[in-house]
Image (tube, rainbow, N blue to C red; front, side, top):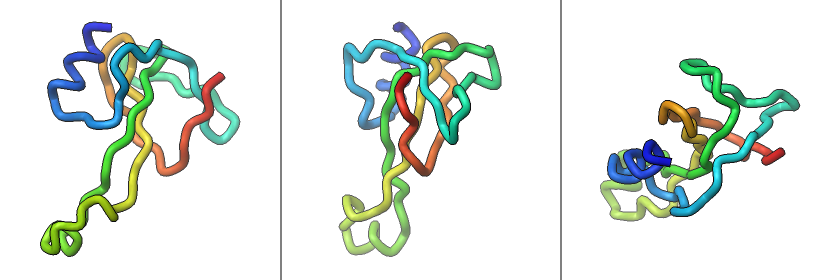
Length: 86
């Protein structure tokens, strides 16, 4: 879980402390880390900021991406739709 806390310090919002890494599927396929082949991830979310909304200070209205943080190496995978927990 050390990588999880490193990711939190790097500014990833939405990951919940104490979340147990789990396996996830997207489009019917199991998500695996392309770097280390791990199959367990910690879920989180991130705002996809746009210049216009940032200029008007309404970043909260920007769309959100779903991310999975690899439990082994810390690599972040981004998804437009929410991954399903196994």
